Length: 119
Image (cartoon, rainbow, N blue to C red):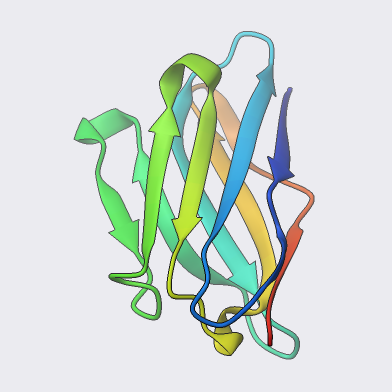
């Protein structure tokens, strides 16, 4: 079993920055890829960013956040970070960490972290 624990959400003004972190813990696991998704009220969950440990560290960003958000991983700490800059009110959502691990068929999710962008 793997647990994903998120931190770093909160309230930020438009144009501000926020960093989300997600730490994976458990026993006998190896990260294949980790990602951030978000879900705003009344909308479907959408991909924000994904980083793959396998296959050369490929990174994918959602179209709505390209150029404003950076995903990066601290392999030593099994942690993935999401640096969000130039935040807009429409970035308000619950952000979920997602992880895929070698040998574990299920995709794992964090508890969700509220991000609010408002003046």
